Image (cartoon, rainbow, N blue to C red; front, side, top):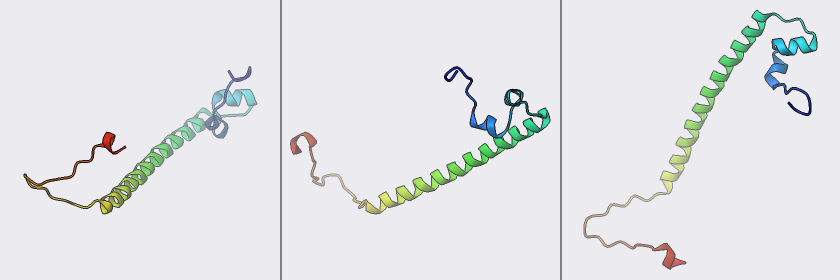
Amino acid sequence: MVYGSEAISQVEITIPTARIAAVNDLEWDAKSCSDWRLLDLEAVDERRMEVERRMALYHKTVSQAYNRTIKPQAFKQGDLVLKVVEHVRR
């Protein structure tokens, strides 16, 4: 309940459900409503796949940029290395 009235989702405004059609006195066909719902669900899956593809591309780009800044170093046993201690550095 939102200020004494029922909340309506944006999807229900775009594709009227039986509840919205009854409130707005619209003529509706259960078959066409279910067809629209199925099309929307398929579109959601397509959008999700597109987002996953873009995310993978973004992660690849970020990792390539990070890897360009890293200098590879090879250490052998017995090499002396400089160790930085954070609490002493402050």
